[in-house]
Amino acid sequence: MERKVRVRFAPSPTGPLHIGGVRTALFNYLFAKKHGGDFILRIEDTDQTRFVQGAEDYIIESLKWCGIAPNEGQGIGGKYGPYKQSERKDADIYTKYAFQLVEEGNAYYAFDTSEELTNMRDMAKQAKMANWQYNGVTRGSMKNSISLSEDEVKQRIDAGDPFTIRIKMPRNEDIRFHDEIRGWVTVNTSNLDDKVIYKSDGMPTYHLANIVDDHLMEISHVIRGEEWLPSAPLHVLLYRFLGWEDSMPKFAHLPLILKPNGNGKLSKRDGDKGGFPVFPIEWTDPKTGDISSGYKQRGYFKEAFINMLAFLGWNPGTTQEIFSLDELVAAFSLERVSKSGAKFDPDKTKWFNQHYLRSKSNKELATLLKEKVTGDFSIEYLSGVANLMKERASFIDEMLEGDYFFGKPVEYDAKTVKKKWKERTPGILAELKTMYANLTDWNTEALETAFKAFLAEKELGMGAVLPNFRLVVTGKGMGPSMFDISVVLGKEEVLARIEEGIAAVSDLKSF
Image (tube, rainbow, N blue to C red; front, side, top):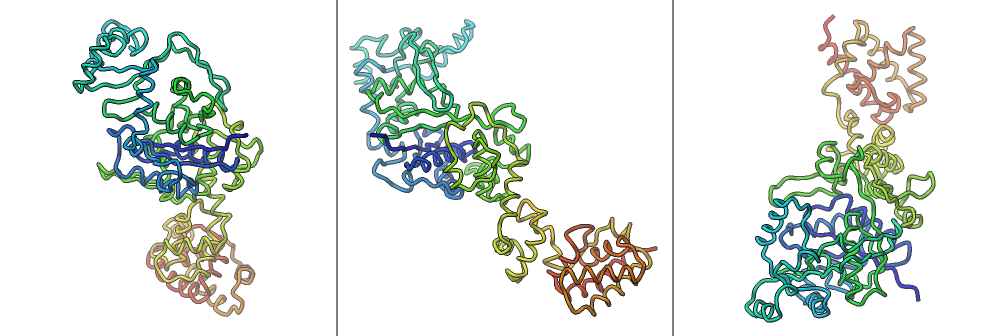
């Protein structure tokens, strides 16, 4: 019987969710939906020293905004809970497995203090021994249940001496496993250290906790970031030592998201420097109060954000770039995920947003505009504004650059005033106003036809009239078609602005 697909996104609540984490969640979601499986959210808070207040809620809200909500897990429920590791520790889920590993000779108690470990590393540095490790070579000289007698170990435990439990890494053994993205991976255990799997505070480390949880939650595929690839051999060993090899999930390690120049992993600092966010939604640091903007607050549509993320390390094998979430589910496969890092492109992200903005109906955009503007503007009126401005914008806020739609000009473009406003301009515009006042039809075609007839009658060039017409009505030196603008503003408003503009600009210009 084929195993049901069950995948998990397992972030740590140590701060805001980076877009690399969101991409991991997205790829897990797409894989689960593609195969009719479950997408689970598990909070891995084994490292209580790094816990950040509010981070868990931030993770849940981020996934909710992105539209990739889990169908099982923390904040949702399910039959495999609890879904937070600290709560699973309270239920004493991990301890028996840690001690089972010790009893079966695959792990051991270590009594070394942090100071003793630091001293050992310092001594190794002084002896010019690079990268000292607690391993099969050094464990015999440390304080642990391998180097100490059984009586000494029992005395220490009975006395309440703090201890950790370390994996007993085999010597000179090749650990081989298949990665769904990278193919076969082989690592020799001589290059691996005896990692701590159970801490002195009674909490398992990530290595033990995620293995136990994945097994008990019947996870079929572990899809996670490349940074966990070096830990995979240890995890494979733990499955073997615990007798779970037959149910071990398949591994897939996603490529890094790189800086725009391709040199190194994308960080918050890169976003600050380049002027783009690296978090899905806004984050407020609970300690400093510093606010980091998110894609949502910067005006990105979640559809554009998700579409952009999907292409960071994956491609459909076609020229198609615009995908809805359902289309991504249908097209996604781990076989199309790249092994190499994916460069983040801020401009491409804007391009995606521009596409989604332009694809929305004028009414949808009008509703979004109404939330941004002050004043009692109808959806019909704002739909007209959206129709004119959306081809020139990548974000809703950029549509507000047409501020003349929401109020009369308070300033007039100095460059246009200087270059185009002549002594005869007020008289020409006054005649234009009179001509438009007598016009019965107020639509784009009628306004343009009448304007051209006016130029012909007065023997004037387009450059002598149109820039000044735009100036008095909008205050700008450029923008959408003035005839389209005039239709949206309405006849009465345009005529009033021409008259007021003639007086205002004339006061600015001295000949």
